[in-house]
Image 1 (cartoon, rainbow, N blue to C red):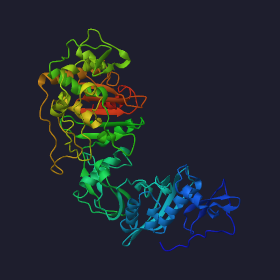
Image 2 (image 1 turned 120 degrees about the vertical axis):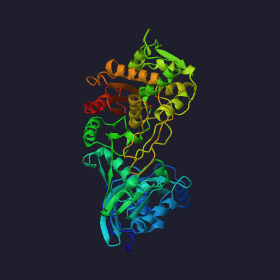
Image 3 (image 1 turned 180 degrees about the vertical axis):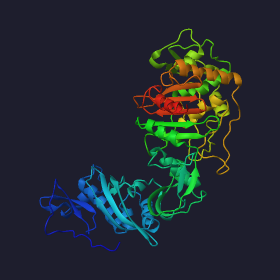
Image 4 (image 1 turned 135 degrees about the horizontal axis):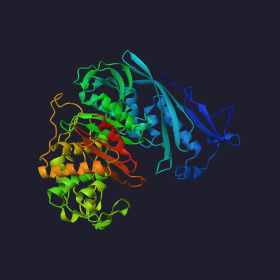
Length: 557
């Protein structure tokens, strides 16, 4: 990057001042800085007493525009000049900054850097990065925008850059690194079950899925690596199952081929449906085999459909119903209480709009999603009953699914008192995603848990998860009766209209703290298809997630 002349500290001619702040260019390289002027004299040129200097050293008040500009400029200028020690010392975490900025040149092979500041907003300073990535005989321009924030150091009040890896590049998380070289993982071409290519251009929801396929199968799919600048995830990022990310491709690799279980027609419809909602996700699968046919999310960046961890609300009553039937605490056509409220563990539980059903059956309570019909049975259950039921028959919560890309397998923790009661209706500590709830509906449809998968286990000879038990015949028949009745006459009837009689469904609404509307859930099966969806902050599941799920089931003929 070469040495650059230092800017003179004094000027014979002052630049124009707007609102007391002026931006100048350092060494012609494009880094903006700020200087405040008062009475025609630069603030830095004013004489200061020792007492004033001491007071300034422990400054705790709000940052001035001059302090923000000076701190930002010191960091950016040093970074641009390749002065790692200087840039790191201008941050509040010199060790972490030094490590990443050293790798910027040594590992990422980035040179000819120009950093240009934008207009600061308070303590936040946006800036643009223009550079060149050079690896062996390959070069390619690199351009992106980032930002930094200036804070006071607690011990002496000095203004410094608040260090996070995202300052260097917005896609970096703390602990991640930048590397340029032959990609550790060759690219892959993902195909659907019929051999059609799956791309993010055609199917935007599949971005995270395609990243996951490359990470898992790229080295074994027959491709060759290209050269690229990529984010290599650190330990904290990998613990959240984040995949490495390509930022710039200097030369293309030869992709290998990975065939998935997805169906292009179903995927297209799933994409169309979730796009109608701001935060919707859906999964469609084949109950008889576990094959995943479609995965879609309306919001990019995180795969809620496969990796989400959300309270499933009343769709969890499918699992709870199987437990109550197994223990002889409920039968589909037997009388069952559904009062307005029930108190357990110090909490008062309500039904939606405080409704009650007098002289009703368990089937009527399930179809209308009566919370108190389930909470009223909590006193007859052990704390670990629901956890054991979910694991034994539905394969949930054991963290052993291997679907071919990262996924969350559901969680049904052992709880006590009010939290245990809340878990019976899909609240408390219970966490699921559309993949998990589509699997629950599939288990009811077939009577046996089949672990969902997106890549056939024959591709890499991995073992699929199994459940230790099979639902008893009497329990299974009643579960199917409950779900069929709900699809025909209950809260799912409007969405499932015209899809019977070989069908079943359950709706759900999950309350979320600080969220005005609940998350709306819907899970259902029809023939050899099962699907589940969630619309976050969408309201009742029958109205929001229901049409999404029903549209996919309707495609099955």
